[in-house]
Image (cartoon, rainbow, N blue to C red; front, side):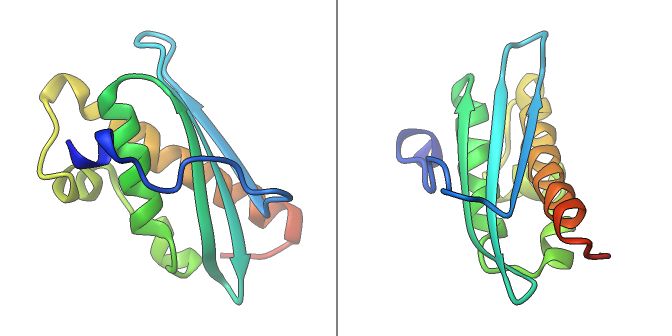
Length: 119
């Protein structure tokens, strides 16, 4: 509940190094992640999410989990880890943790594509 009522890292990063979007047309949730990379680490992570409380909480938690991590470490953030860090999600909201991890990975993919990095 804390990550829903007090979400961290909300907003956009000016001139981000990577942007990733993920959504679910069935429930209407949409997440956009922005990353800034320095020395192979996610120096900053921000998000904008349109969706339910679980989607907002997931986005906040994913941003907290990813910030400061290397690209390789951030890639290992799974939906299961996100749900565990949030101390569980209702079964019908678990798909939100998939969206958060996927949006982060798409932002990393965007960074890799733009900067010719191989990770």
